[in-house]
Length: 338
Image 1 (spheres, rainbow, N blue to C red):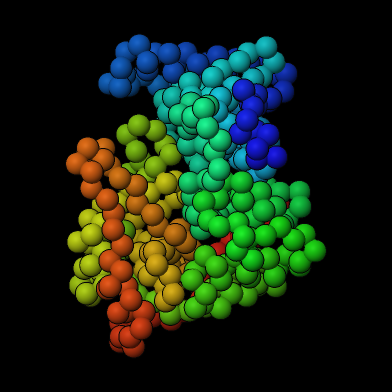
Image 2 (cartoon, rainbow, N blue to C red):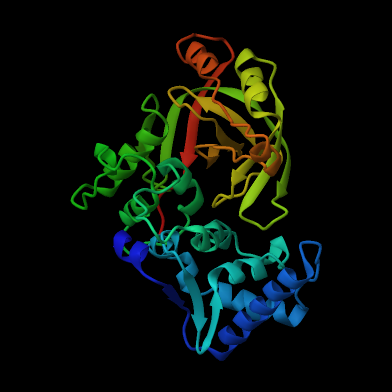
């Protein structure tokens, strides 16, 4: 299926024949047009009546289904259609950026980069692999719906940059769902954590050892839209934390996730993992917000050709040590759902 959508001249997202939906698309298109004509400094926002119309459209089931991610995630041209009204996918995303953050459902945010990115995908060559790891994809889309629960994982393979010959990433609908989640959870967190499934919440429970890197002090949305989040971190004074601060800086730009990072969340590194995670301390549990933090380069860093290099030696030293600042506990990763 991935190859079919990747080779299509255009992928049309059909949102039904509702007149209200068509009106909403036209409203979004006009805001995209205004932004293009007036430039980035244009700050016009939706009228109150327009908010209601557009929010109703964004509640359409299409935006919550997990298999549609592959449809738009590899397409080279996306058109959003409701009734007779059609809007280019890139224009749709540009228009949505005029909505206040609080007006956009959280599940919409990770879809925006997939639709917007279609205009930049080359037509002259086949797209062989995705650009995101399985950990990043799970972080972004674990709240989407799947008729067959296994597809909470398998529907993401078409967007995955990892080696699909890895045993835990091979399609096998005969495996019990708990086994699929356990294998993928172990893969994401490096294999040195134990992963079990809670019989009560049906969530993946990751038990392991790790190190706190710092606390999230600020969170801002990308100025160009809502598909990225810029987080400021107050780093711990440990050698490992300071290594990350030197290599990656005190502000990281991360892809948006199914659950947004909040002030007070914790950046940590789990034993066996090569990348930090973002977790939230709750009354009776520690919830994983981002399992695989992979900072994006800012415009300034791209201009100066600055890359984010993992402090591999510091990670290796800590992973093999018995440092006293290590912490142990259970993390909750919500992989299961409708």
